[in-house]
Every structure is written in structure tokens, then in C-alpha cells.
Length: 88
Image (cartoon, rainbow, N blue to C red; front, side, top):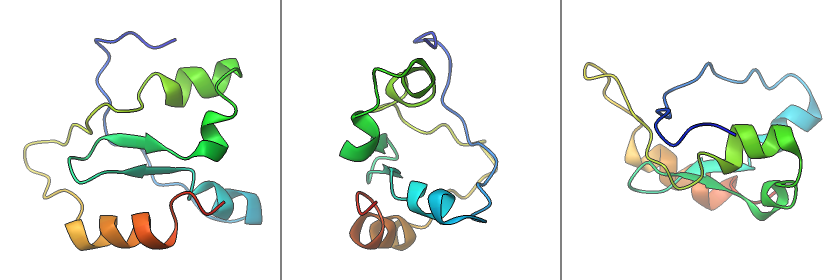
């Protein structure tokens, strides 16, 4: 599992090329304080070592953005929480 001192940083965008990948986009999201949230459908797999290492270890931790980054627009995060998150 990841070390608590390991920062949670921005990662490459996921290319939504398959129905499974597109569905997976609803399994993670960020709250208004940019903390990672995992949908119940993903938390159901926390016993998997890969899921625990890549998601459980970071759930609730804040996204760290580079100083020069504007960050995601709040209205886009709200739309994702309302229309996509947890609907997989």
C-alpha cells in the first residue's frame, strides 16, 4: 500500500475508448475541497491489492496541484458529481 507521505498528484487523463473505461470514469471523483472520493462500486473491490494500492490508499486525500495550475473548474466538478460519479 502507498505510504501516507506519498503525495496524491495529478495523473494522465484516461482515454475513454471502451465501454468499461467510460463506466470506470464514474467510480472516482473529487469533492469541493478536491479530496478523492471513491464510489461504492469501487470500494466493493478494496480487498483487491491493486485497488487498495491505487485508490483506497488515497481516498479522502487532497489533490495536490502544481502552483502554476488553475485547477479544475468547480462547475465541472459539480457536474461530474451530479451526472457521472457513482452511476457505474
